[in-house]
Length: 353
Figure 1 (cartoon, rainbow, N blue to C red):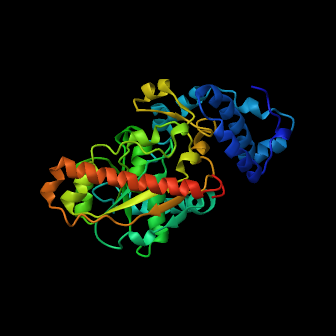
Figure 2 (figure 1 turned 45 degrees about the vertical axis):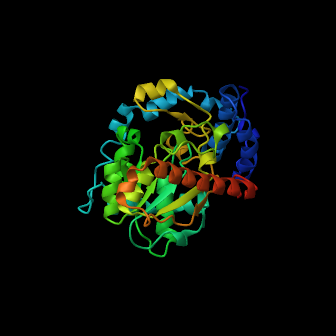
Figure 3 (figure 1 turned 135 degrees about the horizontal axis):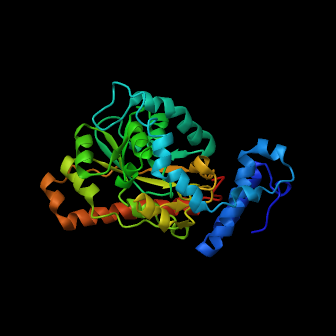
């Protein structure tokens, strides 16, 4: 890769955004992805480290990102790193109000300014149909799962808190492998994430919770960028069975923007084996930008809450009717895919909406 001097790198966020659409279009296979990764990380590093730019005007910025991304990620994601730097952070200052599922209201409130900043200023989230979420009572928000480093759960929680008149608390089910990370699992758990399983979901709904479900699971966030916004299989309809069994209305939720926030260029098989997780993504900003790279690109998000689907017409025992479950599951998937297609056709720019 040719070295890019600081003089060639624009310090303007607008100029970086202007290049992102074209650069992302090149992310088709690993051979093309590595040069893209290096060029984009160079530009972003220059943007977020202006003080280094002023101190070393003639220094090639590319030298700062020449380390193998796998070596950088191994240090950032390795369990020794988190146990050493973050292990105690995840459990310290626990309040006395922690519920049965791990939500720590005081801890969540301390992080709200961070999520509000990302929601309002970085991803500039636009909401449609928020009135379809009931103010009280149990409800399941079933959404597409996207972004190699998923922020959709916490952004849905932020949207309900900021935009819904009731400001009710949203809980969301997180993939089991997230809880294998010493810091990430405990951190998300304190914010409101719950380990994904039927038992936890049913207990929450019987407490009249507002619960977000991502039936694509790991398949939704592990797909390559070339397959963005192509819904994966919605499992075996566990969310439909749950809704019928508990009499919970389903609100289809469609999220656009997360795929471009963390577009997965390729995966690291070595790191996934090392950490014992299904996949470790390599994105334009992570791991080359370190923890800052977790924030991702400033793609503009849009979240659409669809018309509720009532389950009042079904009896609890019908949750074992496989034909009914499959029919409702496919109808729900088609509804979300159709909304995705509509939003993508209307979108003029990934970064400007």
